[in-house]
Length: 270
Length: 286
Image 1 (cartoon, rainbow over the protein chains, first blue to last red):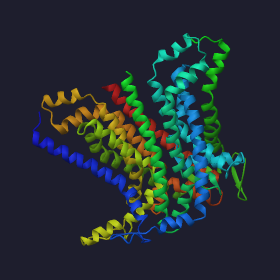
Image 2: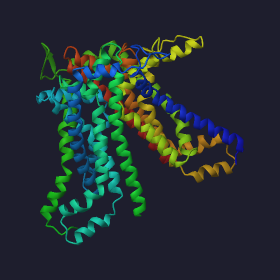
Image 3: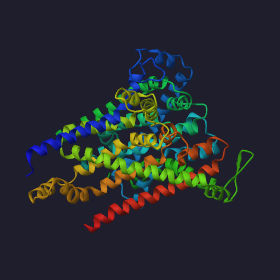
């Protein structure tokens, strides 16, 4: 074995390195939160005074309430549609074998690999042909495309844990496929369905590139941020960002808690 | 098989099977194909007209600024992939072998958080941190160093790319390193292999596929991102993604933007396939 002291030393170096990576990842988030309460327009060190001015500015910004309303509508609709499509795909993959299944799954999982700018351009061109560009429908359609793969992955993982005999047992007891779906599959996958709803809502709530391309005058919150960013330095972004962060993180934490509980329940069930 | 007649069972199967392909064909595959078609259309008086001309392709491919943007984007994304892979590895190694499973799970949870926070807000925060009179330079000034120009440089762009990609690369590398069979590592140690040599000859080859997949995702994300080069890199000279936005938003030159987009997709596919082939080949040889 290795020399104990150098081993322990390198262990601590490596642990410190993890901390350093976390610092890099979280410093912009923390900075934005701190700056949102900082009086300077061009924040630097030392910090200026504590203020809630930027939050008041956001509160009085006419673009924000409408954008928030749009964002909520879009993320709710895309979450529901994306999770529905994701569930169908995950169940099909779990239950059926058929020709061309690899292609089928490829199509299901492809969207996240296409750069957002390209998605935006393709969506804009296609949806404006269909007369939909500039509407909330356009954003919902595009976000559903992007959300479905995430929902599928989450629900598929849960279906992996189901006892395959369970469905067969229900059938043998005379339950129809629909009845089995309603009283076996859906209750079993419910935690992952809720998790998928939260996750996809968060994905949609933060997406700005495609939304920016197709939204026209119906802006969502991230599109408003993008447009403020294109103008001058404006600490309102920090205030909006902190607010959006709290919403998204709540959704993610709920997802995480559900997934953890689901895993624990599964382990106990065995 | 369930006790139902065949027709109802087929109906049941099809109802679950079709929502995804219908939606993804209509709103994903068809838009992408339409974009390819559109790249052969004409723009007259700010309106697109169906046609079949190669003028857009010739125009873009004969322009110096297009190729400058192309190599610049490829170079920046490639460099970012290299940096992210190297920076992530010690962290992933430590997460896989030097901390308890609970700690690992929590840190991975922490690394997932950024994906659900606004990337724009984080980039804006970097603007403030990296600015000429920003936090870093103010800190360095107290030590009597600087100021350094970090904003509107390639350095700024790469910081932005890393903000986007580093957490993902660490997570993917950790997932692949954690699956390396520990008994093989201990065997190498027992046979007197040094720590560095164990990493190079045992851990790296076993985790290669996962490491390459992490790098591919990093490349895809960096190659397509427009926010970092725009707001931290100063947008000039442009990257391909900025070129798409400029061409689309000003002057309605959608067909030319489509040319850029298709070139990007072809490049990404080439890189992805080459990388997967590399990962797969090494596996077979072993």
